[in-house]
Structures are given as C-alpha cells and as structure tokens.
Amino acid sequence: MRKAIPAILALSVVLLFAACGEEGTVLANIGDGAVTVENLQRTATLLGDQGLIQTGTSQGREQLLEKSIQMEVLYQSALAAGVDKLPDVQAQLEQSARDVVISNYLRISFANYGFSEDEFYDYYKNHAAELVSPTQANVRHILTENQTDASRVLAELQGGADFTQLAAERSTDRMSAMNGGRLPVLSPDNQVLPPYILQTIFSAKVGEPFGPLESQMGWHVFVVDAFNPGKPLSFDEAKPQIVLALLAPEADVRAYYDAHRDEFDRPDAVSLRYILSATREDAERVIARAAAGEDLGKIASEVSLDAATKDGGGLIPRLFRGRSLPLFSGTGDDKTVEEKAFSIKPGGISEPFELSRGWAVIQVLDFTPGEASQYETVRAQAQSKLFETRVRAKEQEFYDALETNLGVKRNEEAITAYLQSSDK
Image 1 (cartoon, helix red, strand yellow):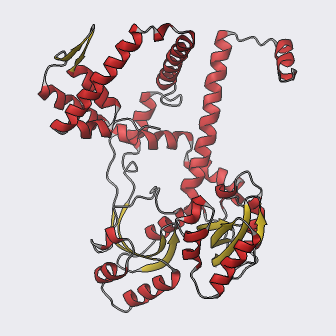
Image 2: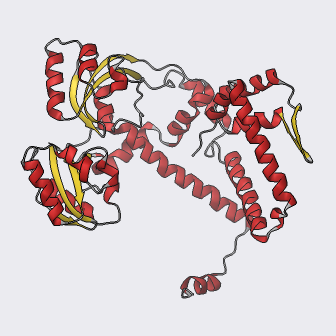
Image 3: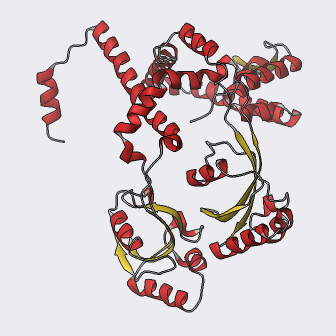
C-alpha cells in the first residue's frame, strides 16, 4: 500500500511549485489539452516522498514534466482511437468510479471509528503527558556468519576490546562496519529485526555488549549507546494512539489477556538450517559434505532448491513448536519439519527426509525453551489484537446500520438456488 504523503512534504511540494510558476502556467500544449504547473504539483503530491525527491532538482522536474507530457499524449491518442468507448473499458471506468466513491465515503464516514473529534480532543487534553513518541535506541552491532564467531567477539568485548575496532575488523556488515557498527536509530516497531531481538535491545543496559542473537542476516553482537526518550505528540500525531486507547482501554486489555493467556505464551523454539534437494541421493551428498567438515550454510547457498532460504544459507531463525511457518504454507510439510527439528539436539544434522517438494536435510543450531508470558511484556501485543477485534466489530455495526437504513431485502429463494447451482 502506498503511504500518503505527510502534510509537511505536501506543503513543500506546493511551495516548490509556487516558486517555479503560477499553478495555471501552461508548460506544454498538446492537441486540445495542456500540461500545467498545477498538473505537475498534483502528480508530485500523489507520488509521495518520491515526488518530493523528483521536484527537488531541475533534472527531476524535467523528468516529471516529460512523463506528464507522455501520459497526456497517450491519453489523447487513446480518446482519438475511441478506446474509451469500448464496452470492456466502459465497464472498467464505471467500476473504478464506484471504487473511488466507496473508498472516499468510508474514509470520510469511518475516519474516527465512530468517535467524534470532540471525544478525541478531550482525551488528548486529559492524557497529554502519556501521548509521546516511542522511545528509540542508538545501537551498534557486529555481524558474523556463525554463533561461534559471535561468541568470540562478545568475549573480547567483555574483556575490554574496542567495539569500533572489532566492528571494522570482524563485522560482515561492511556498511555499518565503516561507522563503528552503528545502525539507524531503532524503534520498537522496527520491521527489519525479529521481535525477540528488539525486546532484548530495549531491555538491555546502556554500554553493555550482549548477544549472540540470530536473524536472517547472521549472528549479531549488540551494544546500546543510548535510549532516546519519546517526545510529546501533536493532536494529529496522537490520533492513532488515541483511537487505540478509546477502543482498547487498559482494563479491557488486561481482561482480554487473562482470557487468552495461552496465545501469548512463548512455545519452545529452534533455529535451524534447511536444505532442499531433488532426490534422496542429492540429500545424502549434502550430509557427506557436512560430515567432511564443510559448513552447512555454505552448502545451502550452493545447492539448496529452496529459493526463499538459499541466499541466507538455509537459515530459519525461529521455528516455534506448534506454529506453522509461511515457508511451508499449504504443503503439510510444517508438521514433518517440526517433528524432525525438535527431535535433534543443537548442532545435530538430520538424516534425509521426504517433503512434498523433495528431500530435506536440516541442522538444528540452537534450542530455546518456551516460557509463560508476562502481561507487562506482551501488553502491546494484547492491545493490538483487542483493537483489531473491536475495529472489525465497529465496521460490521457501521455496515449493518447502512443496510437497515436502505432497507436491504434478500431474495432467499433465489440466493439458495444460485449458491446450490452446479458450476457450468
């Protein structure tokens, strides 16, 4: 989904084009139409951040102009050819118009999930001290290919080694290594690092290296340099937090957690490497190479038939007991892999076993025992689930009210006949 351009960026686009000429200024006449500064302003705004970047330079504005001229030429040529009169095109235009009207009706009518602006503002005034941006962390890391190397790095750091120097010498993340291992500022909702790594980072002590922790990239050793406290939010910035609090207040979140506690417990987990081969004989050759001392991750990168994990050396960072992996979705292989994975001790390699797509070999890297959840740790997750449940209920209430107002009458006999009719 394309992100809406932030208000400040939209304003920047408007100001930039204002400096370039009046909105009605014609930049190119094309047949019966024209491309104006206003056209380019609208196009840049719809493109979001990309549009702002383009309008920031003369070359970018020229590219935007040429693209707009090209699209106008194509549009007028299509009209001249009568494409807009074709029956299938007419149907598409009608459906597109309906979709635009419906989406904007929902945006306008359901923008605040049934709450008024006054309710939002009252909450904002009464809870201003709580409405702040999330705490962020300034973090450095050293990335290695395996757990053994990461453990050595951690031991050296705990012995007094300089983090910046070790990052430059040992980290496989060469981009951050050039800057002492420094990563972009992290928020708790970061989408790159796994949740369990983020939880560890935001519970760490400043200045104390920790790890090893595994992700799709490899094995990390981290150090938090500082935590940046959140800043007060403006009314518009705080709206997402306000609607969350109104639909899922603290007492209800706690009650939801108590009723669904098992869903938040963390089951046993393993990390593993996975290699998919076409035949049993190919899988046996993988085992023979590993027995001869070759690293299974490198073997996976060379020969695995699984495109999703091959480039990462066959790494599956976390397989939880009783939870399906999208990797095996729709195949039934998840149960087979789970059974094998939890029957092997860390460091062990399985015998070849058959899956729906071929023959597999796995190596279990480590085992993490499950643990019962604590409300304080999973509160945000529980609130999010309750919020989603109540939003769906609100949406259904909204739609049911519309049906009632319009007096929808279903022809149950015709509906039953339609649903029961055989496919033709």
